[in-house]
Length: 259
Image (tube, rainbow, N blue to C red; front, top):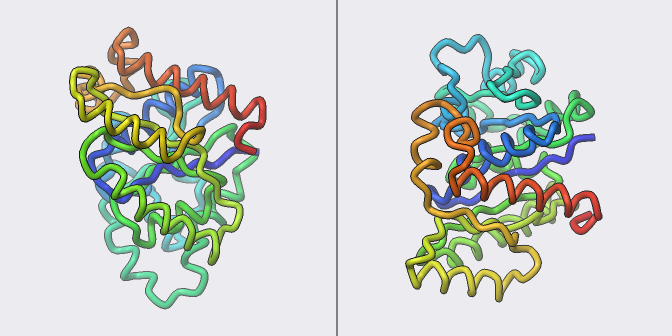
């Protein structure tokens, strides 16, 4: 059965989509069958894997309005073992269209349940908000991965997210865990990056991954070519950091640290 991990932070620009793409690609390179689900109407996960959103025959929007089932919209990517359920801008209207619909918080969870045995990991990329799309992703998840940018106000945003996770546990998904916190956009030349890292590790201890994602040109450039950084420049520090993060997650799951 797949382990379902939602990559979430209500702050924008912290590396959620970069983490979804490149962690998913790294796990796929380890020959794990991976499904990425793009729940962001901006669709950066979809376009970041080289998929033309205008030419799609089906997307996650069709799942929410019950016009299709999840397996019908899944597409392969350039990397073996890596698949994606793409997004389109139509997702912007979902919250309004589903107002008053009973069980709307469980739509994604029900859709995933039909094919959970086909993958080792399902990674869900969220929009930078705490609305219905993010709520569906949290209700569907076994755990969350929280990217935290090594910049000012990082801990302030984390406190709001922790309160949201508590609410989701109490109302919808009591088994929801924090899989881990990953520090992103780390600049070793910047004293603030080191301060933020120290503070996050002090507050969250073992929940913080040892692997740290640096600021890296290759990570910034790869999406414009529609590729994970492993296909763009596998020797880059960005690629190697995500490969190390994938190894860390695989090792922790194998020894049951987070189970």
